[in-house]
Image 1 (cartoon, helix red, strand yellow):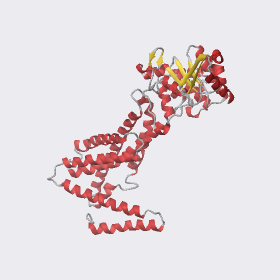
Image 2: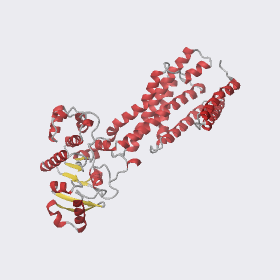
Image 3: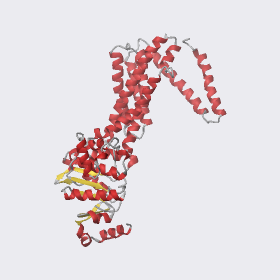
Image 4: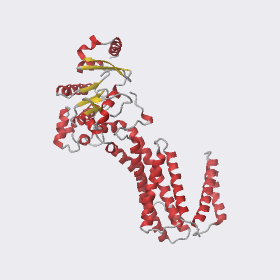
Length: 260
Length: 202
C-alpha cells in the first residue's frame, strides 16, 4: 500500500484528535500546542513536497537542488544558534560545521558512487545528514562551553604550567565530544532490535522490498554517524578557538566573572 | 602582598603569569616587557599556584606530567618529597586527596617546571593549619634557595611570619612597598588604617 491519499491523511488525523482528547481529559493544557504542531508539520511537509515535486522534474537544473541544500544548512545553523544561545558567535561555526560535513558525507556518497547524483537522492540524503547531526552539534557546543566555564580554575592552572591552549582544553573537548556522540552510537547499536528507523519504515510502507530498504537504512545510519562526528568535531574546534586568545589566555565567560 | 579583598591582588598575579594582559601599562619580568615574551615559556619561568587546589583528573604522577611529560617515577617521587609528601602519593588519585595534600601536589607540579619565580595566591586559604605551616615553610625554603616567592595573603599574622618585603595593594594601586621590618615606620596613614583594621579581624 503505497498511496494513502488525502482520505488516509484525514483519517490519520484522528490520532491527533486522540492526543488532544487525552490532553483535555488529563488537563495537560497541551491541546493548542498539539494541534498547532500537527497543523504546522502538515503545512511544512506539504510545502516541502511541493518544492520537491518541482525540483525532481528532470527539466529543472540540479543547481536548484544544491540551493535547497544550502538553504537547509543555513536553517540548521540558525536552529543550532537558537538552541545554544550562550555560545558566542555560534552561527558561523554551525554553518561551517554543516558545510564541512556536507563535503565529507556527500563526497563519499556521490564521489564514490554509492548513490547516483540527482535531485531525488541529493535532497533527502542532505536532509538526513543535516537533520540528524543537529542535536550532536548543539550538545557539543553547549557542553564544551559549560565545561570550560565551570572548570575555569583547572584550565587556567594548566595554562599556568605552560600548556598551550589546545592542550589545556583537550580533556574538556574530549569529554564534550564523547557526551555528544554517545547517544548517536547507542542508537546505532540498538537499531533494528528496539526500533525500526524512519527511513526504512517509510520505504517498507511505500512498498520497497525489505532487504533493499535495510541496505538503504544501513547507509543512512553510517551517514548519520559520520556527519554527527564531523559537525561536532568542527564545532568543538571552533568553540575552543572562540574561548581562547591567540596568546593562550582563556577569555572570561559571562557566568564566571571573577570577583577579584 | 596584602590588601583588602577586591583590591586587585589576584589580578596583579594573573598579570605576572600572563593569564591576563594589562589594559594600560607594562608588566616586566627581569627588565623585559611581558608583551614581547612567549607566554608559554614565561609561564614556566613565573610559576603560579592558585587559591583553591586544582588537582586534574588522574593520578598524582599524571598531574606532575602535565607540567613535565617526560617525568619518570623516580623524578615524581623527588618532586613530591620536595613538598613534604612521601613517594607513596605518586599513584594516588589526585582528586581523592585532602585539600592540603592537593595544594602541595599543585605546588610540586609548578616546581617541576623549575620556575625562576613562584606566585602564590592565598594558597593556604582553603587548607588545614598543618598544611598551612607546611606551605609557609616550603615558600620560605624556596626563597632561601634563591627562588623569590610573591605570596598573596589577607592574613597579616602570616605576612609578619613570612615576608621579607611587603607590598600593600588598595583599590587597584600598590600604595606601599618596603622591607617588612620597615613597614610600620614607613607606612602612610591609609596603610596604617588598613593594617589596623586587618589586625582587628584576626
